[in-house]
Length: 174
Image 1: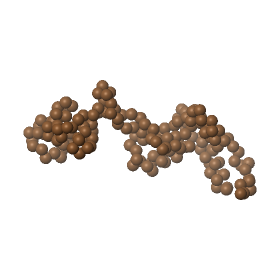
Image 2: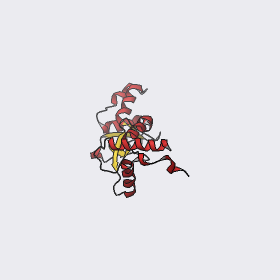
Image 3: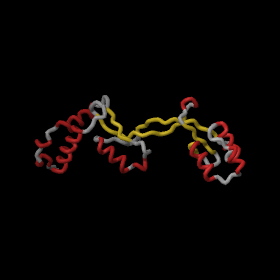
Image 4: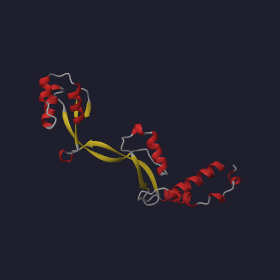
């Protein structure tokens, strides 16, 4: 039981001294990240091309670059390709790659990764480092407030203020 009390004492110290990232108490950390979602044309930050024959989407600029570098199409076909005009690009893809290809306007949004909740910022950082293969390179800790959660607030207050030295190991005999 001494190990449990020592853990609680160390956790208490960490909770009291960690950065709060501008969040009110009670606070916890999650993983924030970014993802690309379909958007209206006027809000597009990039375009992807959807190719039904392979049921895949590709970032348009990357796809066109790959075609120019690796494509075994005729010189004439490659000369026709104009990467600066989206309409010409999709027409070219429909002509030479997939006649049903379509452009998808996208924008980047901030998301909170599901199934992530940490009591300390350091633990959230370790999680991101150890699980970076699940996230983008922009993944980061994201502080949140457990708003109107009285039990969470009470628990964190106890963890931060309780005098753990006042507990004797004999109190935990079952």
